[in-house]
Image (tube, rainbow, N blue to C red; front, side):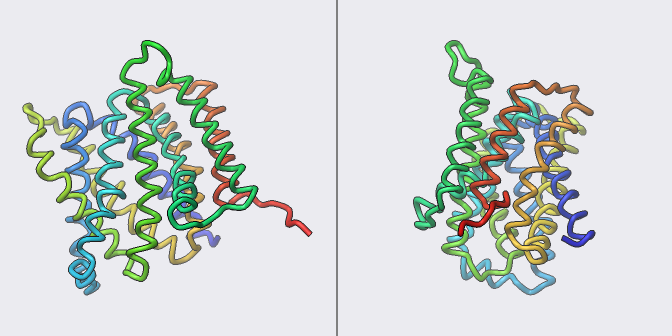
Length: 293
């Protein structure tokens, strides 16, 4: 990568890592449903004027149905799940489970698109999911008498499986659309999906200025601006290099959580993270391997 692209990659990882911090700061006052709704609505309103300036709004009309479905899978359900998880588990732990997104993407592409992985990638899937199982077990999600942290772990994994499903859905039905149109359309679709539930579960007490600040940071910084950086990287360095941002996000999320929330890191979290990232590197082809003769 060029220096500018590497800087964009690190900046994107720092922004997406901060999203788990803002979730922790906003979820308790907004609740998961309202926070997710504010996030996608704000991001959609941020991206729509840019889409209008680039004269790409026609794609919203011609592909409205697929953009709605992709919005639910890409943002609506995952943001709701991560907002729920933020009520019970740390920002660092949520980000580690978020790193399983490429694993679910590869698994779903194998099942749905018949994109069969080779032996190394299949081994990577197995290693990565073993890391997930070990880390989830250490966090009591499957132990007798587990509290809400177990449901939070399952919510994180449900979110990442939605991300994986959305990748295959987008590849099949939205290939060829301008990336900005996909970004804006999915956020608007997610807004429609969450609108009525947000009205129903809007918090009775008005959220504080700090909670509103966290929600707006999620919408404008961690979703709207992050999408622009993400698609710019895709165009310049390709998907294989761009997906390496997954490896950097947990480091930033753990750092933000430690710096601003006083969250700690356990040895099991570090070990589980290492196993998950090793499996991800193999499953996505990011880890260099000696070619066979």
